[in-house]
Length: 433
Ligand code: NAP
Image (tube, rainbow, N blue to C red; front, side, top):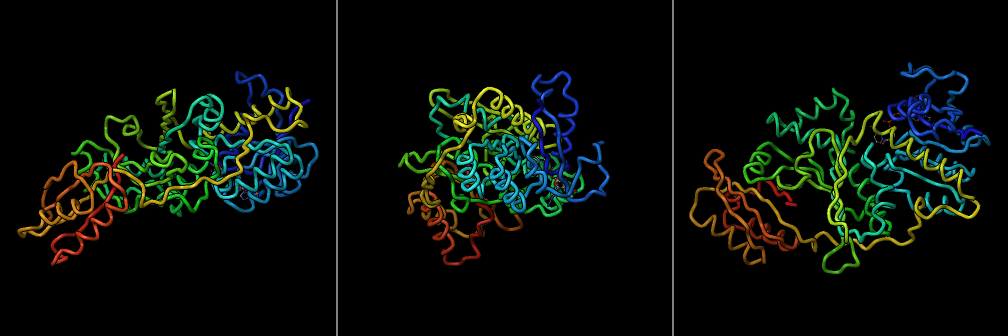
């Protein structure tokens, strides 16, 4: 008896998934027991890159979910609605669900998992974070013996491509974004990627798996890359850093009970492996006890890579269904049973290093004022370098030691209060990893 798939969506990932399922030779033998039963799309007239029997393709997605023959619903539509309602209806109909949709899980994971656990069905989403990189099942299973201390990810390929191009070709953000849109690496509306929403969705999923509590999306400190310019990329390079959009979730070293979860452009030292993750590639760097450090690296998006993760989830569910009586509940290594929300440390209590670039007038006392403002607010400096000139203004770059975010911003406020505000302009502020 074959396991029947109801595939919702036949776009990039849906097509890649169908291609694998229709061509199982040389892959895991279990694929021989999987069959595409029906495929739901928005438009029947659209030309398709894959030939499917026309009678199985339909716009009646609800009909697929209610079809008693469908065992596993594979949601590859994306976005919040109708994806959320369709997933909940599939669960209510007793179907197992595979999805690549980070947005719907990050924002509605609580109701989806509560419903799935009650119904005794699986929700697997390996493709939702890191595309083809196996990271969610490894976190749940292979790394399960570890106390995870920190997860740091480059988990948005679009922004990593843009930052890499800006650095390698010395080109402006807007210029590279336009090219990325032409090449299909960036959406027509790039907001989810360049403003960090996509990375925030993904780090909330990673954090909840690694630390065992649900994350409220609004608790994540999020900043995108629109303000990054080639000047800072060049200066960071001279100081030995690459600028990357990092998504970080870690145990708060002071309280241990709360988490720090944030997304933002960050200076990464060249000696760190994340600094050499370039282009559309993704990487997730996990620090745990007793394992130490491990990095997962690979293609974070794309038809084949993402479909590889989707089909792995289908295989896992098929294997579970063949070997375990699901009436006894969901297998603990494949389910998600978190009930509580994590306490997230307020951003002003975060301790991190900062990079700041100032444009300073050529007046006595300006540099002294910078040093005094930092010193008075408990911000100790690792370096303060006059690095060049912009017109008649000296460019000064400061790198701090680990400081409290609140203290750093108090120092910046004090700097702004210099007797002639025009004499010191804060050109940019970035965190340092
Ligand atoms: P896509 O190319 O835009 O495809 C979306 C598919 O969903 C299309 O086939 C579309 O039908 C169908 N669809 C949209 N609204 C529908 C509706 N109301 N009813 C029925 N069908 C509907 O999207 P994608 O890039 O494959 O992404 C799918 C999911 O994978 C998203 O959650 C995305 O975040 C995730 N993901 C994608 C990648 C990637 O590399 N693309 C990587 C990781 C995760 P039509 O074809 O008829 O328009």
